[in-house]
Image 1 (cartoon, rainbow, N blue to C red):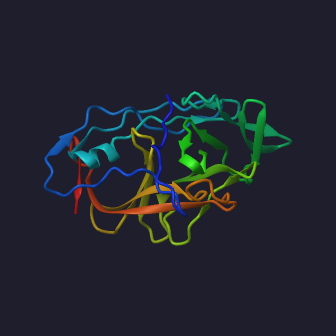
Image 2: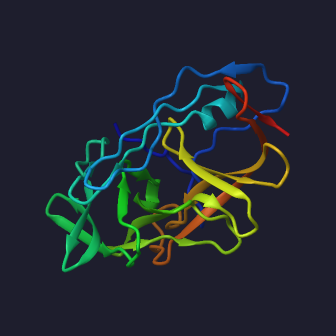
Length: 249
């Protein structure tokens, strides 16, 4: 039910385990019909209804990346439960007119106040496993033609948001400041990806997301975690085709 990010090689900045991108000479591979991806939740419903994502064809590494996993949007009162045996739960709660993210690990509870926003927040039904940097939880706001996502992690006993790195694209979906488009999704391994239009037809810059963490070997805790976008290069996505075709370009 849940997606998790794979083990990470930790340095000063934690990079998520990579699926190596191979050259254009690879034989195309078609993915089976992937699990449905997330959709908007109508008012009053606790969990989103998901829709079927398209089949993807191309080099095997890109097919794995672009085959989307189902990630539901949970409203207040619907917890997400880790499937790694720890029993850690996270959920949005409403208290005193404010929206809070609450993470519980046995008797221990940490809480973060979600910044006030005109759009009702939702919690993605997954737990990001970040190795020594700990777990992460993703809160979203969707309004109009944009989706904004924030990753929360535990640092020094506090639940805090990972700060975006200047110059990186925004995590989420919608339009970029220059009028382009961006879109974020999760693959079957639970890794987060964003594609940003370059301005050329069907061409996108591809990014994979990580969160900075403590140094390897149990170094000093990173009290100001950073959200880091790793540039995976340029890809072409032909969505007018059936199945959708992805390739390097």
